Image (cartoon, rainbow, N blue to C red; front, side, top):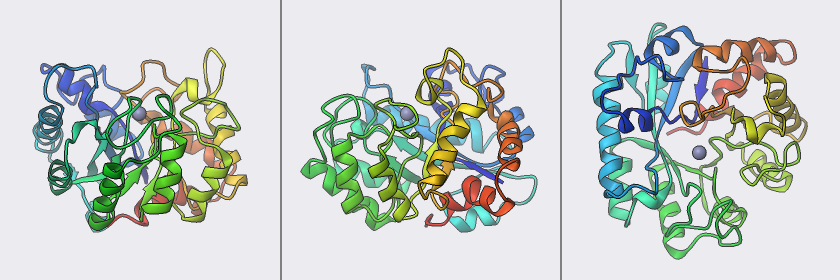
Length: 302
Ligand SMILES: [Zn+2]
C-alpha cells in the first residue's frame, strides 16, 4: 500500500483537452496505476503562473477534469477525502485525492474555503513564483508569511487540512512550523545530500520530524543529484539520510510524476513504484516500509 502525495496529471489533462486519463504518454495513467502498488494518488491542482486566463477559473476546470476524466470514468477509482474513505477502499479499488500547489490561484479566503469545500486536502502555499501568501525557495527566499499568508494557515488549521511547504521560502517554512497544525512537505528532498533550493535544511527537516509531519521524497532527478542520470540509489541516499536524522515517522513519497520531463532510471512511471519497494525491502522492515509508504501521510489526515 503506497500513498503518493504529489503528481501533475491534472495539468496534463488540462493542457490537452483531447487527452484521456489512460493516455500512454502519462506517467500516471489508469492502466499504469492499476499495475502499480500505489493505493492512493494525490492529484495537484497546479495552475501555471504564466497563463493569461483567470487562475481560480483554471483551478475549477482542473477539479472538473478530476471528476470527469478520473473519478467518473472508472468504476474502481474512488474519490477519497478522509482517513475513513481510504480505509474503506476495497482491494481492487484506488483512491484519488485533490491537493493544491500554489496559492496564487486564490485572491481571498472565500476562494480558499471554496476549494477546501470541494475536497482539497493539502494546500501548497506557493509554487516557485512569489505570491500574496509568501516568498518562495527561489523568489524572495527571505520573505516569510504575510498577514494574508497567516490567515490562510489559520483557515487550513480550522479545516484540518495539510499546509504544504514544498516550494516555500525557508522563512515561510519557519512561520508555518510555528503556526500550522498540519504542516507537511509533499515533494522535497534533503539539502545536505544535494544542495538545491527546493531541498530542505537539516534544521527544518528535524522540526518536521519532531511533529511527525509528512515529508515526501520526490523523484525529480535534479533534486536528487548532479549526475546526468539519477538512479533509485540516489533517491535511497536521501531516504537513508532522513531516516538517520530521525525521520522514520515522517518519510513519505511525492513523485512529481507528470510534472517532470526527465525521470529517475527504473522509476519512470507509477508502476515502477514496485522497483522502489523492492529496494526498500532490502534494507527496512515491513513496519518501517508501511510507515514510509502509507501511515506517515494518513496518520494526521482528517
Ligand atoms: Zn512542485
